[in-house]
Length: 614
Ligand code: G6P
Image (cartoon, rainbow, N blue to C red; front, side):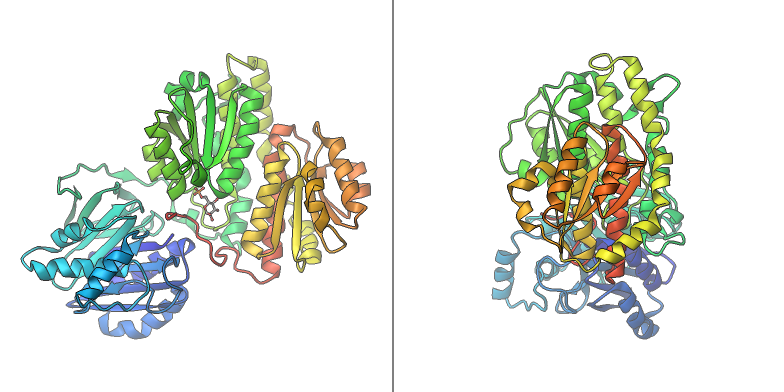
């Protein structure tokens, strides 16, 4: 949720931190701040964007430009509204200790009462501020301890999730960082180290990184770092090479990251399939799950857990796996799964899907499934993420960094992945090799078809112009297109703040039809599959109530053209492939409506890219 950066080395820290915060702004963007250490501690923080902070910092930084140690934070409010005082870093009363925190301190209220009764004064409404006073208290009680020891000792009192960085003018040569539940990465440079909540701010400085695990605490100095467990036991850490470049996290000529990411989809589809779809052999090779494939095929049931857009991909996965591999699939919101004492056991497979690999609920669902003995497999985009590391086996979607808060290319990569998985599970069981080869051929043709849809951008923009002022939207689809309707509605509400609902088209009669009048745009996905004639009837039902139909249909479909007010044509494809194509016009429609309404599509209000708290 919040973004964290830290720097210690030979460069001026403020510009490194501010640049890093900008790269992390997609995680949280209601306020930002930095603390710099140059003999004394200076904190600059305020409500607003990193850009606002930067302007302010330019003036104020003149006095502290020599600082080569610092920490920075971009906030997504959980406790206390976005404001100057709730922004991080937080300081102790003496002003010699500064802390930034990502996560939620669950017992903050009782800790705060305790500290208040001891005379501590709180300047913010955040849960995070208790941490800095707790550390201060430990240090006051035993001044002989070093910074590492006081942070460790304070953390014993804390329940909840944290990724945190602490600096102190009493030990100006180090940054102490700790992780439980909120990710932290250390970037290794030459005589300099970078700390961040994900790799985006690090990649332009170094590709060598170390991922901290839960329950670890590190001391980072100019000449090295050490990682220990919270119990003070030395940890061996693997240095990993980042596999993405700077250009992947820049806009590359597009107005927004979201638009860039929508247009990247044909290339992303190729990347997901590369080395996995073996057309000449007519089969799929999924290295990450190869050793477990037989066990996966024997699963009595597959449960897929995810949140948000990944949950929509999971729904498509359900249709795909049941159709191709004939294994029963259940899809659960990770947040529901974790708390309802689910019935899963050793015969089940639980697949968790997450772009970020850090979503708190999905991670908790994974751990619940593991505890109950299920084989847990992951589909993640971020390499080295917590979910990727905690699953027994899994596959990376290789969509590259997704910066736009509304997920687009990650969704398409997840669906391609699930398509390949469904075919891999059907081999030798439910589909003949010829059938698999045929389906793979069709999958391989999708990137070119997707590229053709992107050429409709200006048509879609003109439709957006007509409907940008609508107050509500309804999205309808059947079969494979039902989750696409959900995803289309989610995209629109996330970035344009227009109320939108996705429904299985047949369910319209059981409620939403009451909403339809001449002011209601209804997006209907009406591609030629086994429910085509039914969806035509649904279009009629909407029309006869004066609803404004915008249809997604297959090229050359005259029937739909006759019935709908606007038609966006997509290339022909079989039912299982259709979501990969039908979702693209819906992403573009949401994008254009939102930009025409003046919304910040890359950073929609109240949302965060990576939801690392419950
Ligand atoms: C947030 C994001 C969504 C995303 C969801 C799940 O709500 O804004 O775009 O779909 O989290 O994230 P994950 O990283 O687990 O796929």
